[in-house]
Amino acid sequence: MYYLGEGVKRDHQKAIRWYGKAAEQGHSGAQFSLGSMYYLGRYAPRRETCTAAIWMTRAPDVEQDYEKAHKWFGMAGGRGHAQAQYVLGFCHKHGQGVEQNHQEVVRWYRMAAEGGDAQTQYLLGQMYANGEDVEQDVQEAVKWYRMAAKGGDARATKILSDMYETDGALRRRGFEENSRDAVMQCHRAAEQGDARAQTKLGRMYLYGEGVSQNYVDALAWYILAAVQGNEMAWDFRDKLLDTMPARAIAEALALSRQLDAEINRN
Image 1 (tube, rainbow, N blue to C red):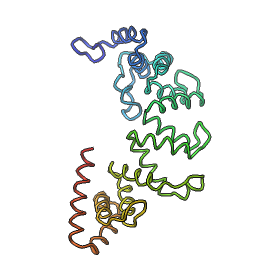
Image 2: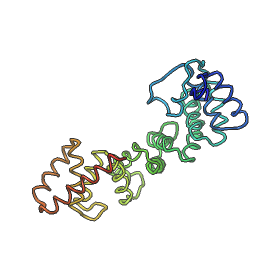
Image 3: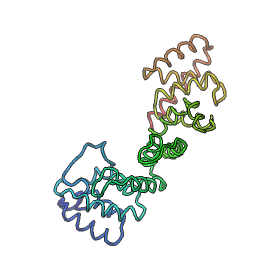
Image 4: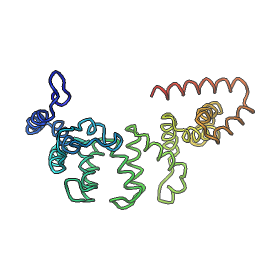
């Protein structure tokens, strides 16, 4: 109430006192909110540089204090608060309130990821893919990317789709190609509006790569990608329009409109 000014005059200092009472009683949400207020203080970073929950708790009249922030994040993270665990990993990575510690980065990120936080699952995938703070392990990277994609992270979905596109590289690292998983990841990216994934999916249906060959589905996906300016999709769309019967083209057009409506709803 005091933080948002709901029914009372907005007062961040009173908000801190009330958050503190709840936090001392073990309320992880209050602990995270206190940590967030001290983490940002009077500073207002760009929206994209921090999580939504932290950005929403910026307090212009509170002094930034990384040590206090880390204390409260630590209490919340210890009680299983995934966003607090993510921020703790971030703090250890950048030395905010604590010394930089790569092992702690991985430990906190892994806790958040195992708790189902898709953003941290994606970050772990990035770390293992690039050998950042951990030994490079593409198999481990794919595991976390898959979990993040299932949790709705569009970045992980796109990366998986691209990785399966270069499946030879995956096999050289000891992977067995799983075409059904490749199609699934490509579908997810395409359904999120990614033109490259839509073009790949069109090709899969055109040539029967991991799916049953279906010219109607192929044309529908090529149409969607072409609308977004993908030149390869333009070429294949035009070739199919020149060779497919009118009835099949009509079905593909209807399907593309249906798919477009579903993508825009999401």
